Length: 176
Ligand SMILES: CC(C)(COP(=O)(O)OP(=O)(O)OC[C@H]1O[C@@H](n2cnc3c(N)ncnc32)[C@H](O)[C@@H]1OP(=O)(O)O)[C@@H](O)C(=O)NCCC(=O)NCCS
Image (spheres, rainbow, N blue to C red):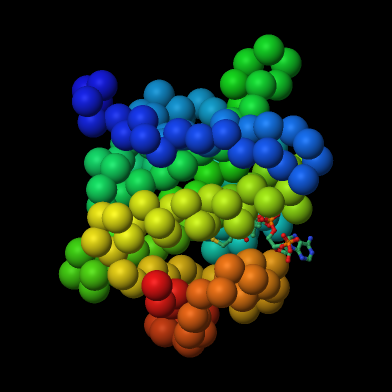
């Protein structure tokens, strides 16, 4: 990735409810090991809600796809803190555009010990706003029907949402 293609303008700092400050930036191809650490520190339930399957580890190919993005059809924001003198990714929000359907699939994951601090809401707002800048007007996600926290988050952000079943999975479409 060339320096010119890295979208610096989406870097920001966020003050959390607990008074800590975190750094949000676009994901980098070199973030693979930090994503593996995030995955390993997430509870099985959070991992399931994120991937909608019981993954025990992140397959290489998936890890590559999660970190090598064109910042246009695929975009991810990582939320970082310093832990034990090193960077740690504690949350990620991303979209991935399906050009045939013209809908972007959204995904969010916040490490369990950093939840309820406002990170999920901010990542969702920011990633949708970036998608809109890139001309995307439809966002969706495959969701567990019991994911009340995600439903509550979407409700509080004031988005118009539509829930439905397709191909055996429960999905949400967010109209922006
Ligand atoms: C869903 C998720 C991303 C929310 O992240 P978060 O950083 O905890 O969310 P926020 O702190 O921004 O909270 C958003 C809202 O959700 C609700 N909420 C969050 N945690 C909650 C909890 N444990 N119980 C009840 N409501 C909760 C609150 O209404 C909150 O709004 P508030 O600001 O009024 O308190 C996080 O729980 C997560 O990673 N879950 C596992 C993966 C997942 O479900 N991903 C989504 C599907 S792709």
